[in-house]
Length: 260
Ligand code: COA
Image 1 (cartoon, protein in one colour):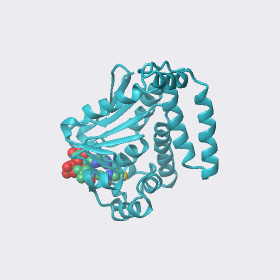
Image 2: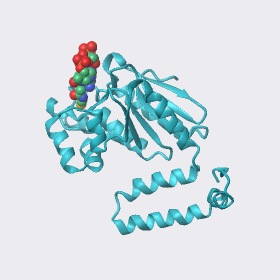
Image 3: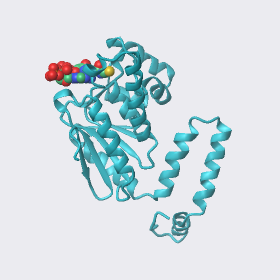
């Protein structure tokens, strides 16, 4: 069945997933989170798709947060389950073997900022605004904000945003390293698609190993992480793509990667 709150568009080697509740600024209600999980799982298993762009519908918002009307009904047990469920979906995205690019077109607040942070790359429109305003609601982030934000922009900058609930614009997000580039709103999707195309032309096993080395390695002590890198480096040396890539360089020609 087609999702109610998501649009999924497949291009040649990548897909664009649009969160589509513009009248609620694409706030993540229970159904949207469940649909996001199903759609991302299907794309993870779709061999024709090698990168995914995640964006929000309308001009105003990427995602303005988890749905506050749903949160307002939670108690201790249901609140914890709510957080665990969203975290599981975001962690699935973060651990996908295909790069996921957040094209942040507007407000990325609370769960929206957390969703963008779970993606592998983040590019932003000049119109976007970022923040973790949960504290203004008597809440704390529940979809990974207290953990991914300090890992991405450092403890001090993260605590500033978490404790003040302040919104920052795209240029400040760029300065803090929260996004890797800022473009005009009308260029956002085009730039995201260009990035997706660049990535889908790269050898697929190397892409997968880089995602794995960074995701797993970041949580390991340095020596164990370096060991993981060496293991993956060894494995990649046994691939046809590595032989082809190095041979093509030496023969001064363009490589033809086969994903083997
Ligand atoms: N959950 C549920 N509904 C939300 C929402 C959210 N996180 N964010 C926006 N909406 C809804 C509004 O309730 C409103 O619905 P209505 O038209 O039925 O009243 C609609 O989206 C438009 O939002 P509105 O507040 O009127 O737009 P605005 O331009 O005046 O303000 C924001 C935009 C983003 C500043 C404001 O919507 C906001 O602060 N949202 C909540 C952000 C937040 O705290 N997120 C963390 C949640 S844990």
